[in-house]
Amino acid sequence: AVWCLFCSLGFFAGGMALAYKRRVKPEIASKAFLQAEALTIVLAWAQALFWFNLGYWGIPGCTFCCSGERRESGKSKSKYPHGPEYPTDLPLFHRNDPCSCAGREQREVNV
Image 1 (cartoon, rainbow, N blue to C red):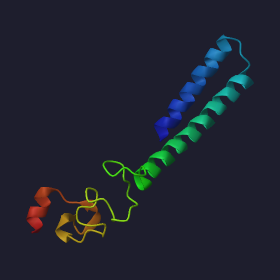
Image 2: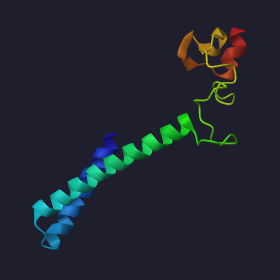
Image 3: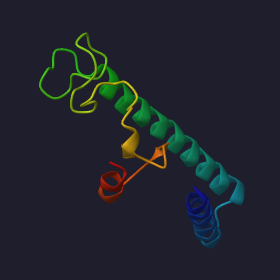
Image 4: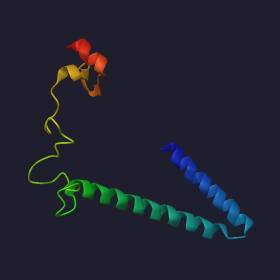
């Protein structure tokens, strides 16, 4: 996220230098930059909302590829092969930490 800030400030500085070279008022260049940043944020949120809704609700009538997670038959079997419940296979966890899965070698040692 920090590199994003530096890129944004770099583009702002470059745009201001170009505006200065072309004798555009700094207020106008700053306003255009802020409008572009605001539009970028709005479009990013709209895109995230669209993809979330597509994944959750799916496309109505489509049962082949875009059925979504919210359906009457339950969760997707490809995403939840052992069911949506929390995994209870303790040898799978590295030092019993559910946030850190053990590799194949670690599972074989624990079994």
